[in-house]
Image 1 (cartoon, rainbow, N blue to C red):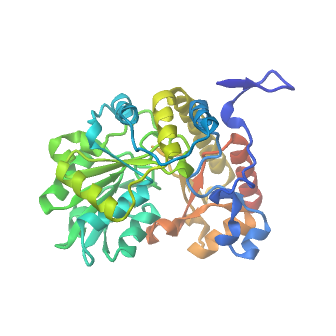
Image 2: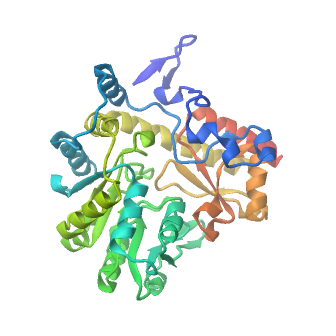
Image 3: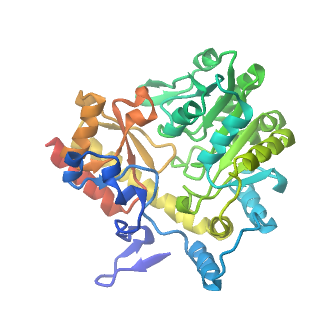
Length: 404
């Protein structure tokens, strides 16, 4: 999967290819005016924000979609095939040792759609949903938009690392807490939860009557070779029966625009209730192209993913090393997982709005501001390293100029 550069014999990765996405109608590159002020847009900030990679999908995915397009008929989808279900199940078994029965798989158009529908199906307005900030923004907003309250058990930040505190976790659960949204691995901090941590969370939730939604869309991006991803429901029957696991090929293979995800539900009662709720909301229909792309990716995309992981680890190492060279006021946290870097900018002494403005107008970088993940992220920025190395170098150059 290497290509030769024409004007030299240097071998470079396929992920070094520069793709101009500005005319591709993608959220990451095409609509800064929807998110930024005119002043912030004026410097043409480099987009390294939303979790969308600047890489082509695996060739097997492109080939499968091309075959479908060449056929030229785009009628109603008949839904997930048995071969699709086998591809999803086999991926979990191969990568994580988790045996998933075909009938546990409930395809959906996206993980956010899944989480919103699960909240609606298994809690009521006025109930609360437990989260662990700093955490993915939708975990904050999706309960609120559905009339639920937030029960918050913040992670503990000390010496450049986040940890789970059992007492804080259980103390946040109230009588009206019905659901816990687990981010596994954790976005944006990159924590890869250990078996002991997951068991502790799961046992508390079971004892307190709290259903676990385990969002595992970043499961394939383990950066630290000493760590491994553990699907929450793989811990045992009790954990499987009190949980719904959300997975998707969207992050792993950069297929978010094709709208495909899966809820994996061992508990038949929960599975059937969610299916009924999806019918009520007309939310359970996947696009044919999304199903085709996911099956091709899970069946043939593993070699591509392994090369990608090596490349992203290189991006992490380069970015953290260069930032340590440039300044001691900014700290890139060690990356256990994700193609996203979580950066502690507290040494700059800037308020959250000032920090965001500094990055946009002085460094000319469009990053995810830490407050998107909760007030705990006020002194942080999240940097998307799912891009060619040249983009990371340009970001480093802009930061060095801004700091100097």
